[in-house]
Image (cartoon, rainbow, N blue to C red; front, side):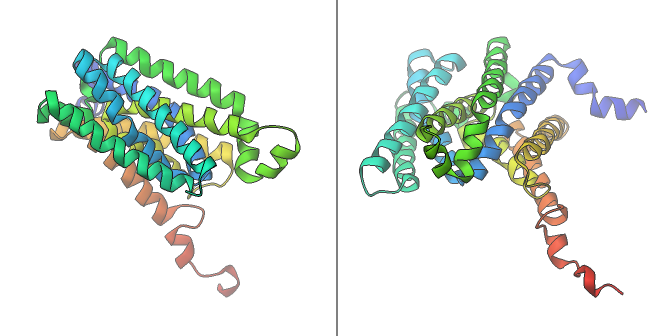
Length: 291
């Protein structure tokens, strides 16, 4: 029993950096899983990836001005993400280019620009830190920023929940009711960028979307109801964070990839065994063939 306690709880009881990392991941999981559900419903999964990468030039500016200061890099990343989202939307609205193609062009430009800017002053270690994050180095200020982001996300989603759901499934009805769907669309994008910034601080730009999308995708194999998907996705994200940190601690592996790989394992298990449209269901015999 003592060995089990030392394995499952010992790292978080003994080390303060593990407790801060766990609390940051838990706060991140609660907010980002809801954002992930709506990214899937709106078929914006790849656009979410573009948003995550578009933070890099802003984070690079924050790094050049303040070094490895998470508030400075976070503020720069948020500004860059909002700018890319707005520019991509404007280009898609006033030209024949589709929004996904506009996002792809913007994020590729932003990614190359960010890597170049970091390379001008920082080392390869700094670049790896920005790309893959360092959840074990979360300090009290970063923890406060992540907790604030989760609170703003939950309050914001509660305010725009109904029109956002209607806009997902029947945008014409929203227009007929005199509402402007674009307002809710951009409000949702702002919340998505905010969560990408918080996740970037914890597990890096390349890994940020893993904790946002993988739990939501896994939840889609268990239920199709929107509130239920959010309620299933959040525990999967919490479980992935806890197990990922444990695996990282005991196996001396990078924490960010460990968390994302745990979330990927949950996705694979849901794909194989889920209650809706899983491999198990597809291979099971129809009920009328059972003797």
